[in-house]
Image 1 (cartoon, rainbow, N blue to C red):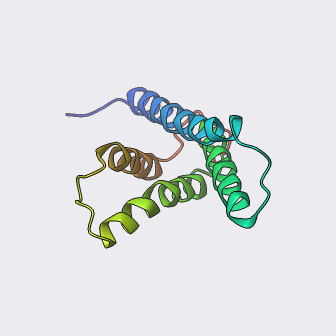
Image 2 (image 1 turned 45 degrees about the horizontal axis):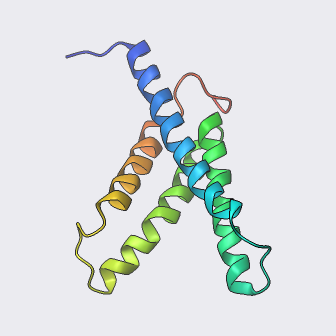
Length: 119
């Protein structure tokens, strides 16, 4: 069954808004309740949250979609892979696995027609 171009563009737009918004607020929420970092490990966590927020903003705008999607996929996927390497079951954290697959799907789909970085 053929799908219209408008339908594909709307679905890519909605996927981009959902994943970008999730990434932005997932990175913003821990920073709201955190103190200014005083050591290197806290600064690393701040940097990770800021990077997640930045990837979310880029995805919301559709700017640099491959870079933002790849960064977000690494941020979400790295803890999953480390858990799997240490014996965690593959389907043990379904929420993070779902987020990883949705971020990867948005990377494959691209920004769509209504994006700042189109072209």
